[in-house]
Image 1: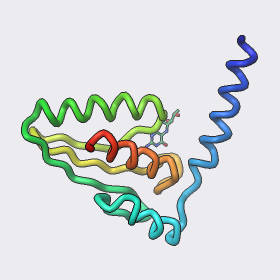
Image 2: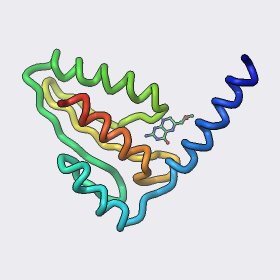
Image 3: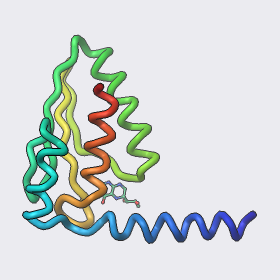
Image 4: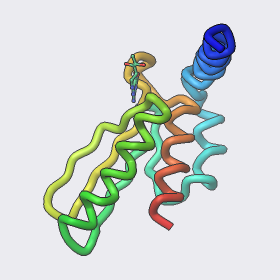
Length: 112
Ligand code: H2B
C-alpha cells in the first residue's frame, strides 16, 4: 500500500514537472481561443469577474480554493465586495505554464 502511494506521488510529480514549463508565445496564442474570457500574456492569465453580491463572489472563491488545493496551484486574486480579479501564473517559473491553463479552464467550468 505504502509503495503504491509512493508510486502515485512519483507519477504526479513527473506530470507536474512538464506542466510547469513556461509556455512559448506561439503556445499562448493557441491558448487564446480555448480561453476566450481570459486576457493572456507571458506574465499571467487574467480575468475580472462581477457577481450579484459578496456571498456569490465568496462562494465562487471557496470553490476555486478547493480546486487550487487539489492542483497544488493557487491563483493570485483580489476581492472587493462583488468583484473578483484573478491572475494565474506559476510563481516559481515567473510566467504562464500549462498548469495555469488547466486552472483557468477549470475555473471556467465552475462559472458555467
Ligand atoms: N501556485 C502557483 N500559482 N505557483 C506556484 O509556483 C506554486 C503554487 N507553487 N502553489 C506551489 C504552490 C508550491 O509552492 C508548493 C510547494 O508545491
